[in-house]
Image (cartoon, rainbow, N blue to C red; front, side, top):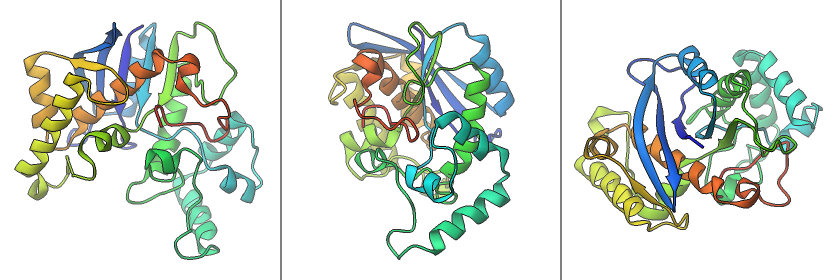
Length: 269
């Protein structure tokens, strides 16, 4: 099965595109074959729908916290909940998020999904720094249009040709380098130390020094891109690719037995 890893942004442009890594996995080796950039969400959607088969790890949340959904009295089935969410524009959602947070004590403003803390990820209702709620708002409809199957949210579909898994590159990166920073969108902060951190991540992936028990292989050109691309988009896409590859080696895509199908799960958390 072809594998992809996608470092997503809800408003791609030439300066900050969606980055997609392509590869495959065999005998515990993940081969990175190509990196692609998409300056528009439409271009990404068309590409995903045109490919006959893939398993993808996508760096965006697929579900909202159950606590938030219950507070809003929204449907607790995933598909109608997502339909309700994407039917609202950002201004209304921002107001709803802010009202929810305003009623809660300091230090507990946001509702979290069960997977957020073990993954170390931001809550999927967060609309600033980083605005992952807008990634959900833009990305899940795109994947549904591409006819993707969501194992964490839907009844099992044996042999589904396109499978979408929620990934989080920071989870795998932190396993290797701890809290060291390895990327920045700010040119002034694109330092030699961050480049060294990216090199350390790549070397660990190549040596199989992660709990995924997989090794990364790629060309010298693509390896240089993972290390030298200072925004970290290429490396994040490759990390998502590794997480998708791991899921293909696990029963039930590596999902916990008691996964909440409304909230979903981050692969390998």
